[in-house]
Image (cartoon, rainbow, N blue to C red):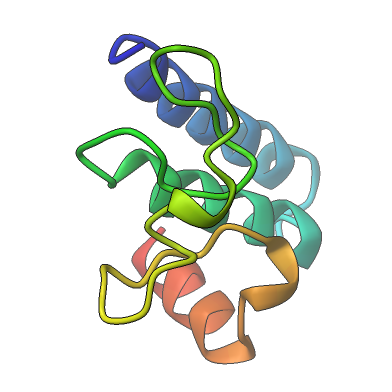
Length: 94
């Protein structure tokens, strides 16, 4: 499972590169939102970052996810959670 995180991150970077090559103004907001979600999920060091993930046994995480617990690490699991400020910050860093 750990191998998938770097691959997903690399895939995301390749998508961004392709989008920038096609559009010099940068990738569309929806793509950046998805990349922010991927980065957030990939940054979680354990199982169950988001409700839609599965644990090691294949059971849906649901309410056991880090996203669902108050006081835990703040993760962005859904594109509608990405704010305009997050979009700006991402674009400035990439």
